[in-house]
Image (tube, rainbow, N blue to C red; front, side, top):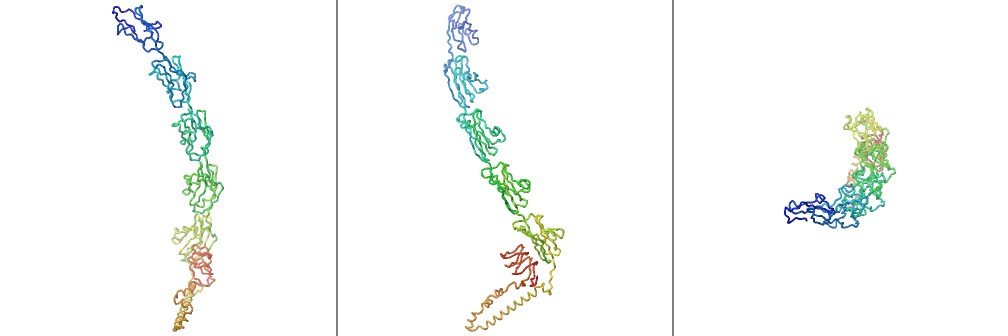
Length: 627
């Protein structure tokens, strides 16, 4: 403080000068930092020095008129670091660190301050450096004595020794250790999984607070292919967890396939790694030995094919018809549309094929192939219709009769793909209700009895005469010649009439009845005493039977005597509606009541009398001498 108090204006000094400790003119030396007051306060020769530094310390002098002066000693307290001993700080990646550096006196500040990275050649630590851009901050603008450095979002590259230097004289070193990720395990592992499952390939840091600078999953056995959603084969199937859990580097792969099998590597910071061998348990066919299956047309067949392990599933499965050039068996193929079904959608290990409504064309060898490696062949035999007879036949009928033209499969469970009846003699005219001449007169039975291909023609006419052919599958056939002959009914012709026989039988019946009546009357006359009553009790039991049940007595007479000529040489066959007698010789009938001891031949419905040989009649008058 330099004052001129008490001086009069006329005594005002001619010159006033402030000199620095170096005897320099203060106003010139500190231009911009000094302020005088004599203009506003005459007599006040003081100066104000702003923004002091350590260099501003020393003895200042105030000179008046070059002969009077006064000295002022200015002491500027400079910054002394509160600590100079090296520190060690431990941090984790991703965290922030405050490297402490401060003046012991909070009112002081250094002339200069510098942070540098000692272990990287004295690299300056500031936002101008790429490694630290946007991550460092200092506080000395608002707090001049606080020279600390804040580094955010630490990485392993930030580990090292940092130095805080002030005024190029004092410094403090701080060792920053970034606790980096160390893999909890590095020994190779084996993991077994099934197709369609998910797998977690484990990889993690031993310290859960750490995280690596970089982590990479790769497929070792496929040339180091990166395993990520950016790789097409893994798109949408992989997931990592290190965003929320930095130390968890595990990899989740979903919906596994056999192609995912191999060795996976978790690599961190291009230094540490762990290999994991993933094995996918693929499908092995439970059977590979060829099979033979027999079926009938119209049935269904299950061609079995499955994995031995029910939890496995093949990458691909294909059914093909080997002997038709490897034709694929699926709903997409016209000849199988709506007839095939597989079950591997719900049961992945079940690769079986169901074929419904079998036809003879379905016969052949079927192959179930998986992954283009394993296969099983199954031979499917369709038991087709084989005609029970193919030898030509001759049948005779009369106008107005009905005739059953026999045609059938040997195996009653078989049926032909197609059957056709035609009249050969009339240019192959089809015999069906669609043909006008046969409308309402023909009937077949194969709807209910598929193996019965016989044809029933009613109300025969002479025009129906000719050769009929039953053809199946355009391969087998049988010819039947139908002869229509007029029936002879002359009474004088004893060989063709039953009237005399019927009359004889009727007379015989009357005689027997009358004899029985006379006997009864005579018997009643002898009754009159007790002794005769006793004798009556001992009479033949047949009499009582007749009295009490005359119809039953009459039934003791064979009914065949009424309706048939009982000559043992009579020849009968090929009737349409006949009843069956136990010892009758029968064959080739369509609807017969089959007695265990019966041999069947050429009849539909026959009344078979013992020992009678039947042939070629619908409703025959059985004359004893008829052949």
